[in-house]
Amino acid sequence: MSIIDNNDNLKNIQYQKLDIKTPLVNNDSEIGENCITNDKIEIKKRPLKEHKYLNQIILLFSLLPFIMIPSILFQLYLPSVFTDYVTYKHPDYTPDEIQSKAAYYKSYSDSLPYISAILFGPLVGVLSDKYGRKPVFYGGGILFIIDAIATLITVWTHNLTYHYIVHTIVGVNTVSNAALSAYISDISDEDHIPILYSLLGGIFGIGIILGPLVFILINLSSFPNLTLYVIMGLLVICLVIVSLLDESVEIAKKNNKIKHTNTTTNPFKLVKNLFTSNAYFSFVVVIYLLVSFATCDITLIFYYYCSYVYDWTPKDNSIFFGGVGVLIIIWGAVISPILLKYFSERKIISIMLFCCFGAHVLFFFSGFSQYLFIFGAMLGSPQVSNLVQAIISQLTPPEMQATILLGAQSISSIASLVGSLAVNDLFMYSISDNISHKFPQLPFLIFGIVLLITAVGTIIVWNYFKSNNTIQKKSVDNSYDSIQ
Image 1 (cartoon, rainbow, N blue to C red):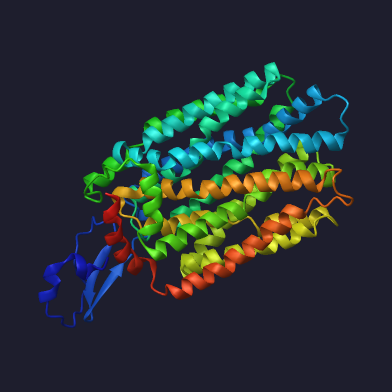
Image 2 (image 1 turned 60 degrees about the vertical axis):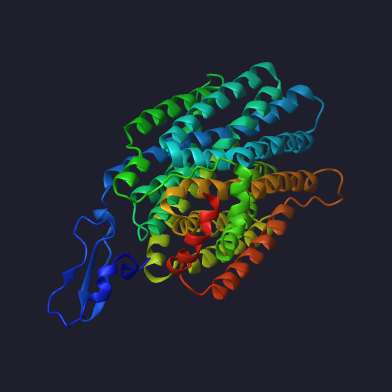
């Protein structure tokens, strides 16, 4: 929204050439100083280091590794749970049969959590806009602890039921990352959002580095199931840090950024309105959905793929995953902020998607060398979804940040659900005895094609909607009235 739209008194100003800059708003304004100079209104953006709530941003970013490390530990630990389960239940299986069957069981573990995310994600968003972001953080940490306990019981009893049931319920945590984005949006100005979302991915990279390192150290111990106990301990620390955060919704209300509270609690209505409120917004959400689908393959099957193709040990996989974390930091904290100085986030999204497609080309040929797989990971590490979320956030009224962000992420969970089932089943089929020639690169071929289509699709959407996000937001603001 332009300065002129917000200041009716400016209509009567007779512009004259000025030798000095005349502020239009006070220096405490979160968007920086706006000045009349040489007959033009000039908006001077504040640098990120002068963010009004920089201490809260730093505290929030310090929380992220304690969220990410348990997630990585859990992700690295679960394959052994299913492998040990198959070995226990089928001691006569060959190593290839064990890998294939374990991937089959893991496909359910990967996909079932998205069901609760789809059903309850929008409702969590509504409640978060009404009661705040911190309850979502508290709930996510407590549910994750319960998930670790249920998995521990599964290991003790050799019964996957406990893990499947609780893990499915805890799947609502899948959308909790959007609450982090909403927290940033609550206390930040729109010009800061893209770079902060990019840095968000970079900070997550720190957790991806530290997670595998911690996993390697844990494996040096002979204490059984130590990984799960470490996960629970880190989550307790996470909850302590959450208690130190100020509630961002209250900050937004104090700054008059939030003017009213959304009262709609029907998640199905919210999901429907996401697609019917505005064409541009709908296309952005579809892009988000396709990105969620097409980028899940490497995360879900890299462990089994590298173990099968390259005979990598758990330690090898942990080192690789840590290296990916370094690359995510480089993309999120270095490359993306530099690109944002010269290009819009829309162009950067397209560039990143073509990089991810190039990575899948290397993955497709990675059967010839593990280094092709490693180089592919280097090229395909940008966190595209964070920048897509930035656009969604910029198009969303402040009072509905969590409702829309979590709603969009819930919709993307449908794609992630289909993607997780597809990638695990494709990989399981590609290494099974049902085909004459094993072809474990098959998932990368399929998902690479989807990435190419998505990348080309973004160029078409950006060219059709040539106006920038700020201009598009005006029409979206009016469309959102139907959601109230």
